[in-house]
Length: 266
Image 1 (cartoon, rainbow, N blue to C red):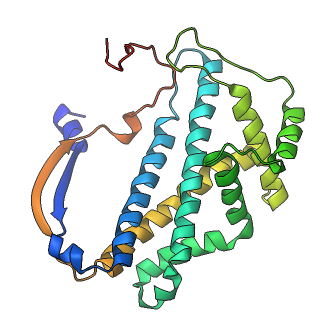
Image 2: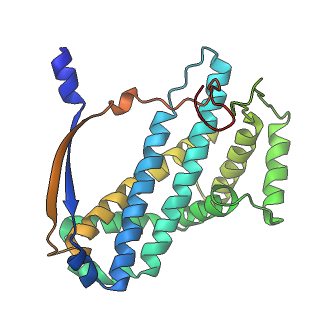
């Protein structure tokens, strides 16, 4: 492949669109809230989905550490994405967006049905709520979690730590990943998910990716077809940006510290 064709692969076109102040002022307070919240939801879900991909390529030269770091990054990102997805569902549910679906286009209704069907499954809703409340947005201190942790630690046995030799934040508490994943595997079984350990953990990774994509597509469609229907945007700029390919981006955990105490690079 020639250098020119590689460059074209990495070229992205962006259009700067502006919703005039007068148009914004014409929106109801509720629609202004929805506009802010829905775009924030899409931003967060896009970010954490990308981080799941970025974190999957760990190469330190040590297979044992690579495996541990992979689990650290993937699990940490997955539990935040799951928590965000659950919050999005709570928002659209409390906003009673379902009452508007009679006016949805066929495509928008299809996306809504995907989202609604996912959370209509009690096991999905309870799992996402459990992760959000126990690990994702809280470090749970209620007694309810203690029985889950105690059972998981009995199953895990020895607890493994990897401690770095400097202050770069390289410490990897691999036992924490193992115990939390065991808690979630046991919870999934309790809720009715089926499969061996590998299959259950695989579902834990795939579920938030699949449902967050459906939610993002619904949010984009809802913005254009419903919330901002008929609103005129002004196009200010068109710019081209050279971007790395998604497959090229890596998010390493193990790094060598070259910051001074003020946060400046040495």
